[in-house]
Image (cartoon, rainbow, N blue to C red; front, side, top):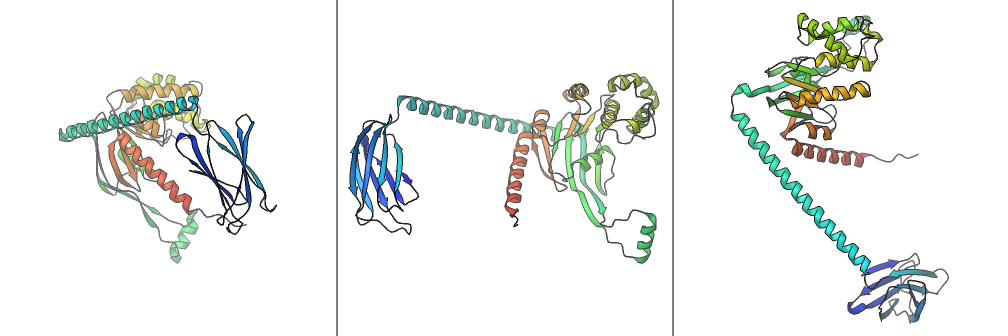
Amino acid sequence: MSEEENNNKIKTQIIPAIHNTVSFRTFLKTEDNKPISDEKVKYIFYRTNGEKISEYDRTSDENGMTHITLNISSDVYIEVIYKGNSQYEKKELLSYKTKPTQEEKDLKKGHSYQKKIASEKSGEKKRKRQEKIKEFNEHQKVLEEAQNDNIAIELKNVTLSFKVGKDKIDNIKEYVIRTIKRNKEKKTIFKATDDVSLKIYKGEKVGLIGFNGAGKSTLLKIISGVYTPDEGEVNINGNIAPLLSLGAGFDKNYSGRENIFLNGAILGYNEEFLKSKYDEILEFSELEDFIDLPVKNYSSGMLSKLGFSIATIVEPDILILDEVLGVGDVNFRKKSREKLNSLIESNITVLLVSHSIKEIRSICEKAIWIDKGKVREIGEVNQVCDNYLEAAKNASKDKTKKIKPKRF
């Protein structure tokens, strides 16, 4: 049954039956929903090319209903007209087809076939996903049962807190005065990581995901040795190349040449090694014409080039990446991507933080979801990413519900 209702309360029901027999019911009602009885309704039938076939008059009963049943063998247009009070006068052109054309049948058949194929593909994709999760879990079990020297990174109950104050004290004088007067606001404790425990095995490619402020970058800095946790234990087996904030640790008053040795020393390279690799660093960075200028005169792209070239001069055991997969200009970005791909494809351990879930899926086989400083889930990359995206979707819906329209 299909229904068509216009603004003046003319309501038409079309009730198909077998063998092209169709019933039409029209209900006349006033604005306050009372039936209009003893009024004429005209049904006019046209072919789809506009040629008139026939017309019929019917009078509404006490319920405001008129009724007509016809045998229709072709596609028609039906015009239902009620000429009563001008307040209710309305001409409504309804389109009704008694049976689908061959073209429509073929289209429907094709659509059904496409739906069937899509359903089969979806089922196949789901089956492969389940197989991949099963293989991942079995492989993780093998790694867990192996000797401890198979572990690249292990964190045990790691907690790191920061003191956060609301006071805006920007000079020593104000600090001393407010300290003496004891009117400084108390600082609150913020747990950037909260009792985090995890294991990353040698050769694994692991993605670290989570919302902004979840503690991902803080966790990378703890693993890299930038931060020392308040509680817990951090065990690292192998040398690390941390690509976090490229150019961090540079002395802005030193030249690019001097910063190669300074930054290299921070990363654990000795002077002799850096001298042997100096020409290679310089060539890769493409900064030959600027290497003796103070880095305070470098653009952010130039700083990133130099930092990237120093950090990736050797093949590390553990490569840590924090949103640095696209540095410098177009040409250098291509070259740095190729360099990273060569490192990632080798047997080194990779720990990647990125907000690009597509990137995480393509590079990693394992994912760790960090939420509010805690580990929420560790597992096969697609399974964890799917759960994360679902949570992000629900979080967005909740935020949207809380938005109230402003009144002006």
